Image 1 (tube, rainbow, N blue to C red):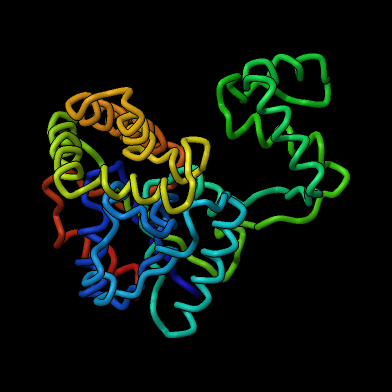
Image 2 (cartoon, rainbow, N blue to C red):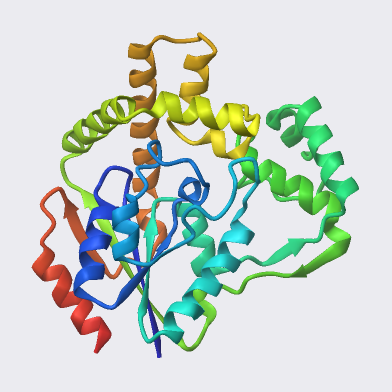
Length: 305
């Protein structure tokens, strides 16, 4: 039986630090599950592990694509699946670590189908999104009895885009990723960093936002924008810290506003990440910031037997 471990939790809760510690005590190799850490050059704003840390423990899906490339959940599931096979072939265990909850959820539960879009289909979808807002597109589907809009928020850009893909490319359906839970030879153990004192997390988020600015986030974003001709429309620049810094570079805010905006956006992200708890079958919880490492190790040791 192949065993996979997943470490989840809100941003700034210490997932990376804990995963590195675990990888020193167990034969783990780490698979990144933070969407924006996949991009090359997005270092400070994503709190990416340092070069030294990356040398100590083998990481997958970090610095794999250029910041002007689009990446989606289907790419992620395929890449993680490939990484898991590599790690298991080395007689080690995959430790998937990150906070992009929707991607991890789909990794576990699978993706029912994929749409083999033609280039002309993609251009049509882009044209529709440029001309109409997500709310207007949502309203346009109200009369289509074949479409279930009950679980799609009118402002959910991602799901609206998927809705368009299904509508435009439905004739070209192909089978998609099955999900880890459907693989009979796979055991999944989910560890979640829970938050008992949210004020402590808010303080950690605020401190991290200030440290990012001090460490050179503005310069990092400036170089990325210049070198790759990026705007806020690029997927990589929608990351928290990057979209706000582009506003700052365009003189839409001052440095104090920038720090406050990054802090607020990160706090909102953490809140959304915590709402995902009930959607996962969590096997073991640890509490931020006082993680009982001994109890966690007992759980992992038992799970590996």
